[in-house]
Amino acid sequence: MNEKAYRLWLAENLGLGIPFSQLCSRLPSPHQTQSQTWQKEWLDHPIRKLHEQWRAQEETLSQVLTLMTQAQWGKIPPEIPKVKKISAACFLGDYYSQNRPILLDGLIQDWPVFRQWSPPYLRRRWGSLSMSCQRKDLVRPKNVRCPEKDAIVMPFSEVLHDFISDDVQGAFIVANNRLLQQTGFEGLIEGIEPLPSWMCGPNRLIQTHWWMGPSGTYTPWHHDSLNILFCQIWGHKRIRLVPATEWVWMQNQEGVFGKLPKEAGAKNATPHVTEMVLEPGQALFLPVGWWHEVESLSPSLSVALTHFSFPNAFEWIDPTHCTFDRHSEDSP
Ligand SMILES: O=C(O)CCC(=O)C(=O)O
Image 1: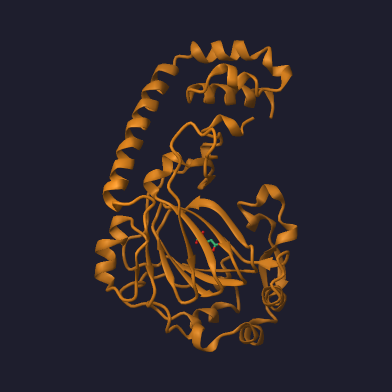
Image 2 (image 1 turned 135 degrees about the vertical axis):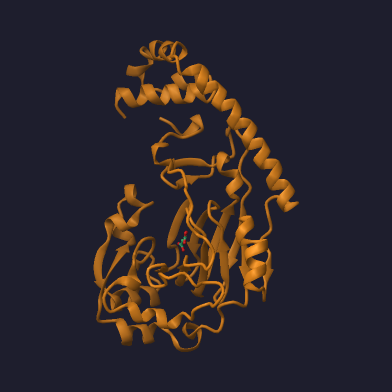
C-alpha cells in the first residue's frame, strides 16, 4: 500500500468509529509519525458531518432490516423450506416476489440428464471439443474470486478425466464460462428440459450456466444481482447463505464479493448463516441479493438458470467502489 492508500484507510476507519490509537498501532512505523496529521485532516474535513449523518442513517436502516428479517422468518438463521411440489404461481407469490429461498425437491428430477447422461456419455459426445476452463493449480491467488481471468483452453475429455478421478488440483468450470454458447456445446441443453411456467425467458442458452469441478471447487462469498434457480445434477454441494437484508453486516470487499466478518473482535453484529447440502435432483432458488458461499463436497455438476418467466432484472447499485474493509482488524 502506498502513502495515499494508508491515509484513506485511516480516514475510512476513523469514519467507522474505530479509535485512533487502535488504527495508529496497525500502521507501518514510517507512517505512524504522519498519522496525527492525517487524523487532523479527517477531523477538519468538511464532509465529516455529512458522513456522520449517513452513518447514523445506516445504523437505523440496518436495525430496521434486522427487525424485518426477524418478522419475515420468525426464526434466525432462517430455515429454508423444502417442498416436493409447488405451482409456479405459489412459487412466484410466496418466494420469488418475497426474496425468500426455497429448496425444490421434485422440480427437475425427470430431466434427461438424470436418466441418460454420465461422464462417459459426455466424453463420447463432446470430449474432442476444446473449451475454456480453469485449473486449480494455475489460478493465481489474486484471481480466486474471478478465476475466469486465469482461463485456459483444454479438451473437454481432459476436464472430464479430472472430474472422474476427482483430481482436486484439476480442471473446473465456474462463473462466466458461457459453455453452452461455445460452438459445438449447444447440445448440452438437451439434458435440461424446459420448465414451462417457470422458465420461459427468451435467452435459454445464454442464461443457462454450467458449473463443474472436483471436490473442493469453491466459490467465495458473493451475492448475485439477479434471481437464480440453482440445479444440482451430480455430486453434493455445501451452500452457506446470508439473507440479503443482512448485507450491512457482511464485509463487502470487491464488487459483489466479500466475506463474513471475523466473529472475534467484530464491531458490528455478525450475519446469520444458514448452511445446507444440495443433493442431485434438487434445485435451490437463490434470491437476488442473498450472499452465498459454495463448495463441492464431491465431483459436482450443477446448472444455474436465470431465464425465469418473471421479471429478473434489477438496478443493483454496483458496490465496486467499496474496496475497504468495514472492520479494522483486517487492515492494513
Ligand atoms: O456452484 C458454485 O460454485 C457457485 C454457484 C453460484 O454462486 C451462483 O450460481 O451464483
